[in-house]
Length: 93
Image 1 (spheres, helix red, strand yellow):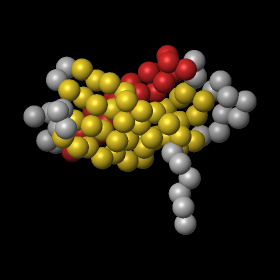
Image 2 (tube, rainbow, N blue to C red):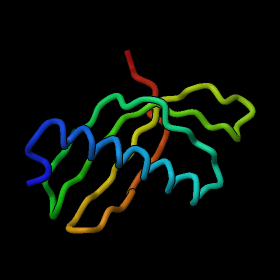
Image 3 (tube, helix red, strand yellow):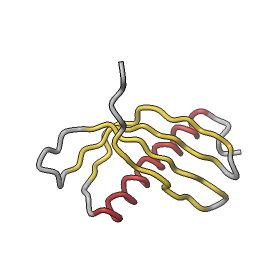
Image 4 (cartoon, rainbow, N blue to C red):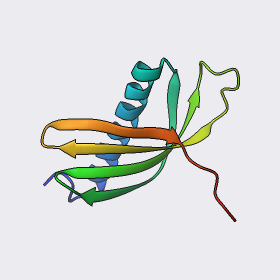
């Protein structure tokens, strides 16, 4: 199974980060650029759901400062779908 080794999991997660950004750019005309992977949770649900937090910046924005994003990528068989891509909500203290 490709998800058993931690190195494979990191490699797959980084690929999904890039794929999610590419999908967001195509769907919304943004120019997001991947900067850094932060964390991911993976659950098994008719395939696998990857809940990923990452840093990116939008080069098409008047303020292209790095921002924290969250995405949900679902992998089922040979298909991958980005179900959600959004700015991470501010943390409540």
